Image (cartoon, rainbow, N blue to C red; front, side, top):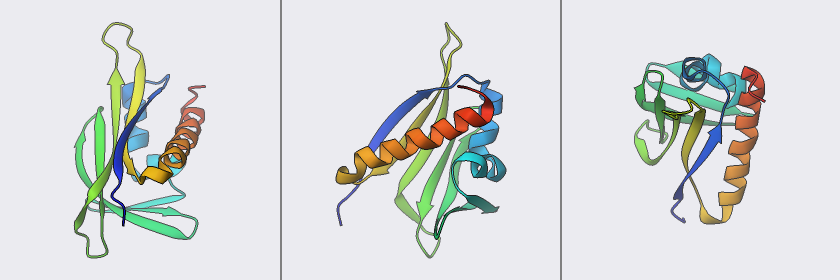
Length: 130
């Protein structure tokens, strides 16, 4: 099995950091744009898309700033992979952007980035940032 490579993408978003944080840190917020259904039990989140589901542990969060989810295996043990959503605010212009850190297999990198672009587009429509 190929190991995955880490990548980062930054998306400008016309939103307050506080509003954006609600959409990246809560099951109900994530369910609106990231997955078809999101359930949480304690620190574990289940993300459901069509027929597939993945589990992740909320590894860290900083209120109003970022969340990091570590993917877990069937026995709820952390894997080496995670995704992180980090709200950046430019100190001078106060422009807000969302930095996505994720992993993909080399041959699927373009597809993975396109998927994020589509999901972030949904998020922007949701919060009126288009």
